[in-house]
Length: 168
Image 1 (tube, one colour):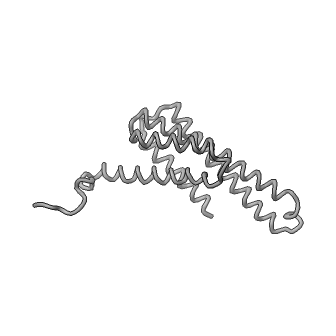
Image 2: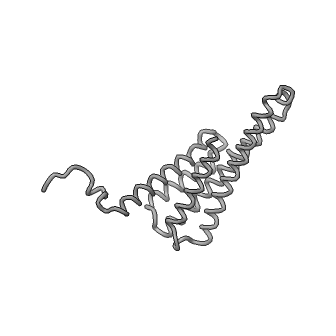
Image 3: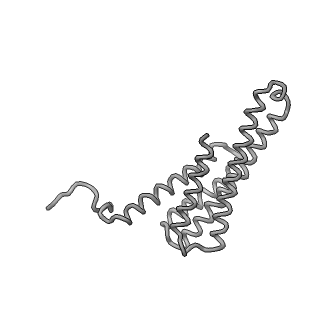
């Protein structure tokens, strides 16, 4: 139930980022960014479909005892935790490169993105918990864009103007 909603939210995230880039978007890195994001989303959708099939097969005692469930589980983990996470890392690397070239985001944020993507590329097979890095990164970037856009749109809400007034 939540996976399709998360997929829709991720599509909106891609749309917001592309809107923020506007005409500054590099065609090469923009294509890699969009393609890897869509491939990541496809991998997650396929993985969730396999998980649903596993649940349906597990209800049938004769099917649950043979190797089909184990095969499907292994396939699901390969699709989501190996391929999907690697596409997520490519998504992050391409977006960080676009940020550095366009200077739309702070350089430190692009460097942190490179570091997290490198972790996803190298450490994924060691721990399944590392897969939570990408959704946490998407949430953090979303909040950064939301907050920075709000402050840019309304100068009265800038950090210097927020808080109690000390003078007349």
